[in-house]
Image 1 (spheres, rainbow, N blue to C red):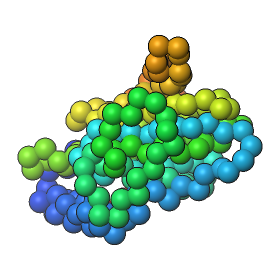
Image 2 (image 1 turned 90 degrees about the vertical axis):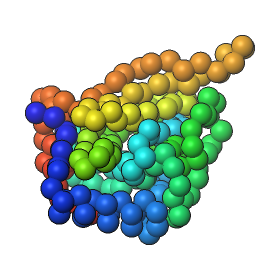
Image 3 (image 1 turned 60 degrees about the vertical axis):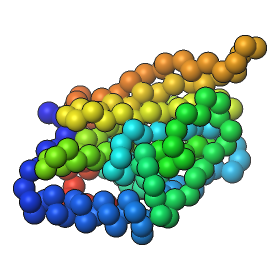
Length: 195
């Protein structure tokens, strides 16, 4: 089983295009996450390669069943209601709407899920990646969501400064395949939404 949907009906494409148009070009806020302002925290850059909006949501448990909250919307392209967000993490190489840098709680593991969408021809693809990771206090990270239908993945890197420049070190990669730890998150992925 995968966190992947493929639809090819005109009705679904019409709804998807309408929702993407409304949120991608206009009315949906691109960042709604409230950052911690003190205590243990890490700086984290979330990125996407998708042209259609990618949504990042958080959950209070690894099962993705408690307290779903939208954190941000990312899009590799123009957004009318864009809210660019940078904290100065090194190695920035993204469109201003394709990445956001935020402070994240470093006291506990965070459970997040990327929801990405793309349209190829007349086919609308959705692909999700759940992940749980504990960020370390006072460190910099990048979590890169990459969708190449019919699959997607999220890779976590630590970004550190060295005497000769910044270095990006691979920590872990999560994909859209279900596992015993992510099977319950599939229900959240399958939930009908108008984004």
